[in-house]
Image (cartoon, rainbow, N blue to C red):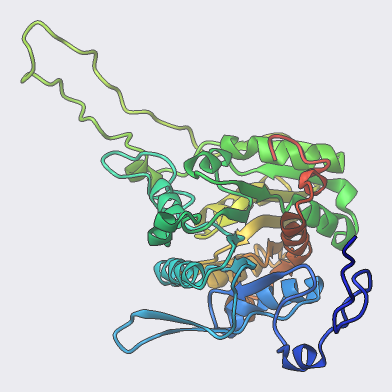
Length: 405
C-alpha cells in the first residue's frame, strides 16, 4: 500500500505554521475579527460625532475616507482602505444641506460597491423627506423616490450578480411606519422612546406630577405609549391656530366652492365644502402639573411654542418638549429662548425645555439656546450594527415597545 510521506512542513496531521512574512505584511485596518467596517458619509466634525460614538462602543476605528465638495459643488468620495468582501456600514447624519447629504450617501455607496464590498448597510438615524410620504394636491411622494434611489445606487454592479446599492437600512422613528413599505430591502426602524423615558425618570425630579401631552390627535398614540410606560395621565390638544400655514398645505381650499358647470350636463356632483377646525383646545387637566409634549420631529417650533402658551394658560407650571429628531431650523433657537423668558405681571418665568436626541447634529443651536438638551442614542445604533453583522435577532432592541410607539 502506497504511503504518503510527510512534506517539508511536517506531518499531514500537524497544523501548518503561520508564515512570519505574512504577519509582518498585515496592515492595520479598520476591521475587527468579525470582518466589518464602519464609515461616515460626511467628513465634517459635527456629522462625524455620532459616528465616532458608535465606533467607540463597537471597539473599532472609523473607516478611512474623505468626502468633500469640489469648487463646482460636485461631491467626491475617496475611500482610503480596502473593503473587499466586507460588510460595510455607512453612517450618515443629515446636516443643514439635506440634498448634499443624500448625494454623499449615494456616491459613497456606489464607491464601496465598485470596490467589491460584500454588503452595504446604511445607518440613517433621521431619514430625510420622511414628512413627504403622502400625496399633497399635485405634488409627489418624495420619500418613495428617495427609497428607490437608495436601492438602485450602484445599479451597474447588478449585472455581475451582486446586490445593487444598499442592502439594508437602520433608521430611527420614521415619521410614518408605513414608509418601510417603500423599500425593496429590510429596514430596521429603531425607537428612541426608551432613552427619552429614561431621561424623564432621571432628570425630572417630580415627574410623577407630570402629564404626557399630544400636540395633535395624530400624535395621540405616541403620547399614549409614553403615558402607559410612565404610569402618567394623558392630555390631547385639538384644533389649530387660525390662519395657519397648514391651510395652504392640506388642500382645504381645493376644489373651489363654485360648482363645475363645464362637465356632462347630466352629471352633477355634490358641492365640496371646505373643512374647518376649531380653535386649539386641551382635552385633559394640566393644571398644576408638568406638561411633557412628545413628538417625533421638532423643526419649525412655532406650533410647539403656541402649544406651550396654551398649556401655560391652562395652569401647567413647567413644560418639556421631547422629540427624537431635533432639526430646529430657521429661528427655532431664538423662539425657544424667548418663550422661556416670558414674564407676565412680574411673575416668575415659566420653565420651557426642549429635549432631543443626537440623530441630527445641532451643536450650533445648543450654543444659541441653552434650554436645548441632548440624549445620546449611539448605544442602540451600535448594538443594531453588531447584531446585523453577526446575524442575531433584532427583537431584543424592540422589547417593551408598543405597536403605536
